[in-house]
Length: 536
Image (cartoon, rainbow, N blue to C red; front, side):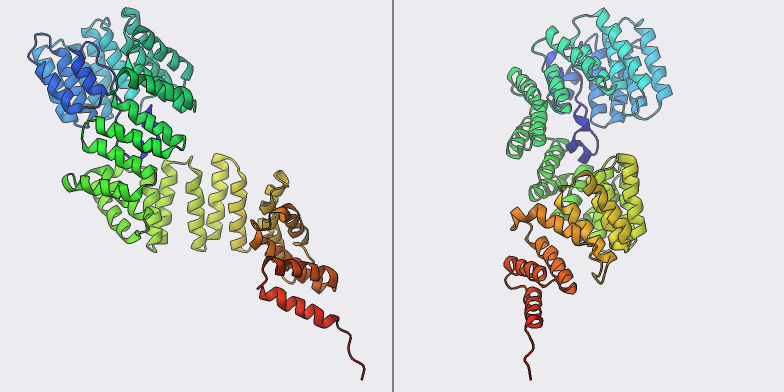
């Protein structure tokens, strides 16, 4: 499902792709919803309200309003449907969907129960729409989803050719993390109706989530072949190219989606989000500011304006934009990246304490993102709160496991805190697991050098020697660090009176950097001390 994909993180809310509305009174409305042309769908369904059996048209119209975040308007049409037909089970489902979205699960189940009773549990469409309500509810439990699967299995039992129900069944299995059953359901939908674009889209989404990009691309292209105007397929294909690192193709394909989808602030917000993810921050800002002229309270656009200013290196404008955004958005709808960016913006504006507070909130909302821990720890370190930085790295390892990157950052924190012994012990985790990783030896050498500030013991010597051994074939790449290593060894041997090795290492420094004053001075001093004194 696309609502777990990257660009949706920047959206105010994820717009779930509506299920095909079987039995809603005509293909025109279904097609408009599938193409995300919601105004067109509203116009169509309103034209169907005068029909004798308009139950499904009222429901479909209310559902469009619900999907576009207008629950009050949705309720009007669901209730009108019931006013026209008090036994309209499908509009009872509609009221249940509103209750579920508002978090009133008891009322939702009450309405669903009424719908099941009114339809005698025999209407496949009613069963499928109750199931879809659970599938699309972010707060659904495993029990809710299994209940949805049961309703869908009953729906396809009563209507074995119900392709729509099989797609919703696939969605339910997907939320239950059963990808195999999900794909089986989507495949069954395509067997029933080979031209059912929604089923091919879902197959592509599932292949994408499992990183089977070739199969995903084929599925999206199949949907486009069946319906060249099928906007969601272009959207997801564009995202696929983004994940594959093909940014030019991603952007051009996503632009096709924007051109085909309904021209709404939501569509433009998706496009601006996509521009942001492809690092076109100037393009993002231009799109954002154009929309804000006519829709100044657009949540996503206000969010992206603040983010883009920061990425463009304009922290003062970013602060102003972020404060504007925070004044408009419901605090309960703030996402992890809001706190992350606000933290970074505050830090750039010299407000470190507040920055730290916001990064901690970002981690609370997204504890599985390692970059947040690194950024927070660095912020603590820059504020000379080294113990706090070390605590954050340790917390990251406890929650997300250990990586070499962690040992590097944790070791650095110990170095900044002046605990060189712990720094060396931390870096040693890298050299133990990856003995040929040159930088691990360099970091250990630095820690050991600080444990032996007078260089009398030569504690850093073996690690600098190993670094030179591992990097000697790529002197240009490691030039700066090789100068450091040879300078240390040249000085160590000079102190020990080993003139030959001292000259060797200082000469190497000079070879790497002919203008190096330290090498010139050291060699001159060694040569001077080596000359025999004249007899009187």
